[in-house]
Length: 238
Ligand SMILES: C[S@@+](CC[C@H](N)C(=O)[O-])C[C@H]1O[C@@H](n2cnc3c(N)ncnc32)[C@H](O)[C@@H]1O
Image 1 (cartoon, rainbow, N blue to C red):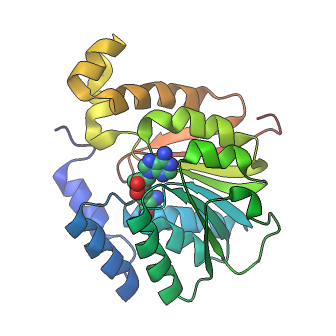
Image 2 (image 1 turned 135 degrees about the horizontal axis):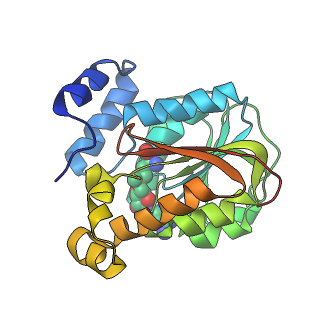
């Protein structure tokens, strides 16, 4: 599999990551041992930096898993509404977040979530498919994190942009898929890319074009983590 960065650069960047406290280290070990995909520590920290830097009141996350990036953002005092389909992962997320003193509500009815920010980093986990959840949520949000099904990113962006404030940030994980998204560049036909690299790589290539060319966004794709998109919403238009 192609890599995004050389081994030397990857190792150097890993050595420069912020240190993990005990809870963060426990979650990273849990994810690694059980094969649960979570953001890299640097991408979770990037979200926390953006939440703090923009004084974000509310964040919307696609894909909770065990609450790793949720924890990083909630610790800044930003409320997080996050969606997940896996009940076991939700239980683990609740346990980790509550151990950190974070107030957590789990619901399968997104219409029950109050859009008024709590100001103390409360987390609302909505159990169910993101594309059923998000159209039923009340905005506004100041930060959106795309991290559930890769082939649905374009729909996640479309659904969340109307809920995002002008000046609000979008972070999208896994945009380079371990280097495969760039490696697929030579295969111009979508069917060829799907056959050789998988449907998520083909979908991410299309998403990346939409993301960087979007009229309502100023966006870049960086080689951080597994390829991280960062954008700011530049207009009120969705
Ligand atoms: C990459 S993980 C999320 C990691 C998490 N954002 C973090 O960095 O700590 C993606 C998660 O999306 C969940 N998922 C899959 N399909 C989903 C859907 N339709 N709606 C919401 N979540 C979904 C998976 O169960 C998985 O736990």
